[in-house]
Amino acid sequence: MGGASEHTLPERMPNAAWAWEFLRRNAEYQRDCLRASDILPSPFILSSGASFLRLTQSIPKAEKWGLLTFADPEKPAIDANVFWSPRLLAGAVRVRLTEIGNSQANLPRQEETIILSALNTRRIILDTADGVRHIVLNGHRFWIQLYCDTDLPPGENAEIGIRIDNARYMRRRLDTAAQLLSLYRSNNGQLSLIGRRHNSNSLINALTAFDIQNGFERPKGDLRDIAEAIVGKARVDADWGVNDRALKAQIKRTLARADRLISGDYKSFLTKKNL
Image 1 (tube, helix red, strand yellow):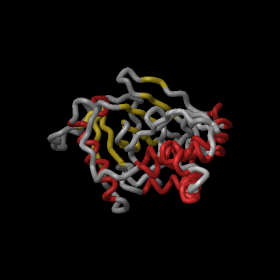
Image 2 (tube, one colour):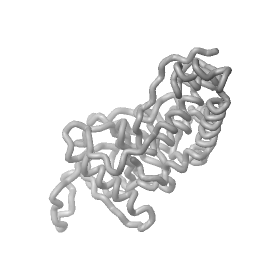
Image 3 (spheres, one colour):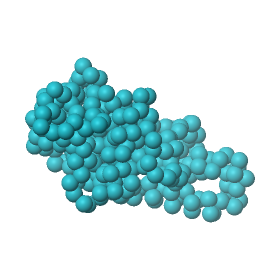
């Protein structure tokens, strides 16, 4: 047996982060990312603290996976620069960025002005070759993705104006807009989460089972190691080798679900409510 070590996953993540956690375990994705490493942009840190990347060309092989560019599969969602295609991410919101000091004088001033650089969270900006700016604001429990047509310089000295201009996935985008406003009003990077808490145990179990079977970021193990990690050593010690048929079947179903999500079903997370 492999004797798996203690390894924990967050109990609650936004669906965009769950999608990434399954995708980054896909061996074909890992190979595609490695092959494209020489054309990937290197991020640099703006004076405001955000990371900025610029693409000079589209990356079709990344788009095949639902991404605008490859993200490092060795990094979890909280650390990786993951930009989902707005065509797939139902909660992606189109915005208007206006450089501070250049607001149209003939328009009434909004009561609350959301300044990009003032948002107290991790901020990543990507300019794609088609002239679109994409912004990801994420923490352990939220994921906000914005995009807009812009010719502004690569800074954060900008006001964010929300545009809801398409009926498709309206509720998803309204949720994102509400999250953005909650984040803006917060002074410690926390926000009021929208929606009910969903039980993520089955997703955690799927990732745990895959990781142990394949030795992903933890020692490689067998079915018994997976069972101990999921249901506990006491139950496994009592049942294994005597009354373990149902338990083994459960583990195999969990592994099969992990394989389906990693192979492509991870995209189903992108159309769901983000929390």
